[in-house]
Image 1 (cartoon, rainbow, N blue to C red):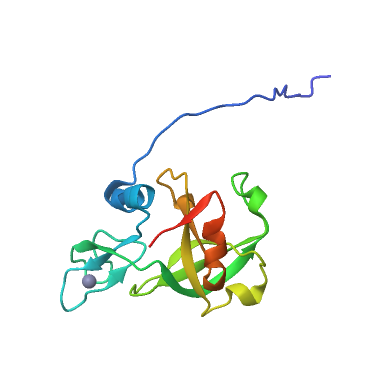
Image 2 (image 1 turned 135 degrees about the vertical axis):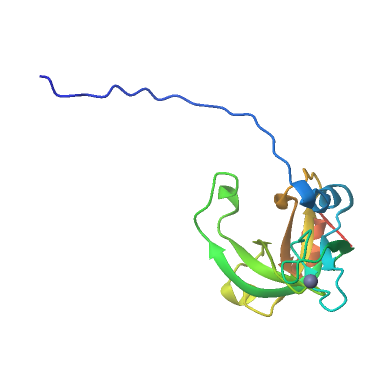
Length: 165
Ligand SMILES: [Zn+2]
């Protein structure tokens, strides 16, 4: 009779908050307003490493880096197919994510890769992909994704998406 019994009530907590992207804000603003993918380039002539995602200071030599517009096509370095995800992406399952090295960049960007026919051969290392943008953008990573180059024209014809460059 003295045994402890916890009384539990199911409830919901809603939290409104905002956060800043700090020094990387320009990347998100340019995606939202101009459908541009900005990286940075190390200003040290002996280094010159091109960062994508952008780094405000070069992580290789610690020199300042400057903003540069990147190409919107690139090559898959590594990828996987996603079967478990958050509520925000559950309707897209299965989809792929991968590290994509944009042409001219020295580092790779982790981003979603969507395909009309998602099979491993479509997203394997070395495959060419191109960025597609949502028409309604919020300045978030979900404002764009990559598709296999041979599907690009069909993706940008869809009413909710458009091409960048
Ligand atoms: Zn550097």
